[in-house]
Picture: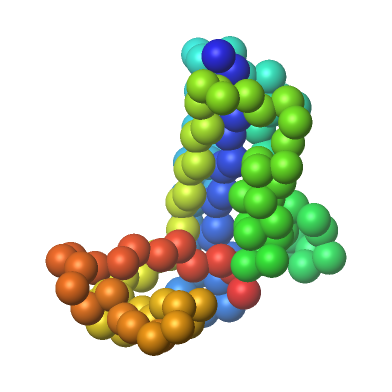
Length: 125
């Protein structure tokens, strides 16, 4: 089986800047290539550091992250049994399942019966 990876590192948020997320992500990329042997063309990298252009398709905006994840679904090279690694370094948040509503259901119910919290990544925008 093959390995595929999406790695995301964000230092330059509009507020609450971080240090080390981009460099950690680059170290993970090095590990994936050198130790696991994943070819560069099977690693998608989205980095948000100072000077990254918002017009860059590799800018870790919400749209670019979602599109990169969805591209896995449409990739004809990915076969059943292949391994997919998704790595994120940046801000995240958690919220109660009571605050999440399934709007595509007829009764628009919440996930209030779910224990714990829902964890989410924070894109750069």
